[in-house]
Length: 302
Ligand SMILES: NC(=O)c1ccc[n+]([C@@H]2O[C@H](COP(=O)([O-])OP(=O)(O)OC[C@H]3O[C@@H](n4cnc5c(N)ncnc54)[C@H](OP(=O)(O)O)[C@@H]3O)[C@@H](O)[C@H]2O)c1
Image 1 (tube, protein in one colour):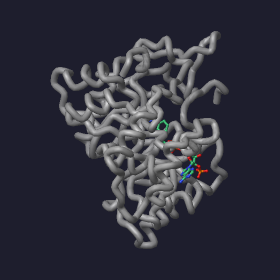
Image 2 (cartoon, rainbow, N blue to C red):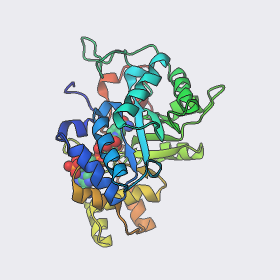
Image 3 (cartoon, rainbow, N blue to C red):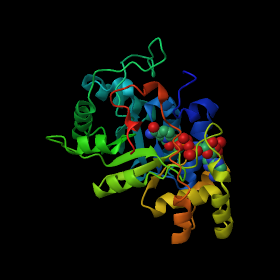
């Protein structure tokens, strides 16, 4: 994978073999039920092994879980969508997904390379349109392979275009986007929620060591002390309190348990506003090699 890949292969880079399976098992025991997966992470079989283990042990049933996967950009051709979904299902050892997301609005040249690049190191696009890709994803709902479909990394214009698509059969249920106190996404969240599309916050803790030291921010630290919570618990609660779904990642058992927060607490309006004031429009997942793509989502304000 290319060095300038500015995306989220965290689990791939940092997780040792077996670590992901173990993390899934710990997470289920701790009470997590929502698992955010993707073909791109190349660890769906390890996630599936963890899920199967807990189903076999009788800790959960399949119906208790909410398993998400994502269609990668090299599979946007209508003819490739079903096989891509089936491949994820097989790796996850499931017969349906609760939610399947279009990982990005951009189609890349199909092939084995996740990130096909030209001589200048820029992404090779496909000539697909995400509206056509969406139709193939709608077929997955009709055939029962997935329960719902949604999008990720869509800007508000792209989402509007999708919502206005003639003969839309299924609306996107969520737009999964980078969202944390340094990128609060106020406008995009308002837009999505006004259109009845939920928002899911990825990179909510500021990412790994390659990310940003969000949890060390003095405002977050001060609020954490005030509520006798960890900084991670504060930024997770921040999202929940604004009706945003939040998907923190960890392979560390103590942190996994910390992130589920059994005891609910409420941040005051002032503290919520102080966190919102940290916004600096700081985006980590910019996918710069795709910035010339016709459907690159970050060329407009939101
Ligand atoms: N749709 C997309 O394009 C997209 C892009 C990026 C991410 N995502 C999704 O969003 C999920 C989360 O985003 P992310 O992994 O980029 O970043 P993140 O959840 O913001 O941060 C993960 C980092 O925080 C650490 N961490 C976890 N809990 C902690 C705690 N309680 N205290 C201190 N540090 C803690 C983790 O370390 P350890 O693991 O070592 O504990 C890891 O280094 C991903 O797993 C993925 O499913 C989607």
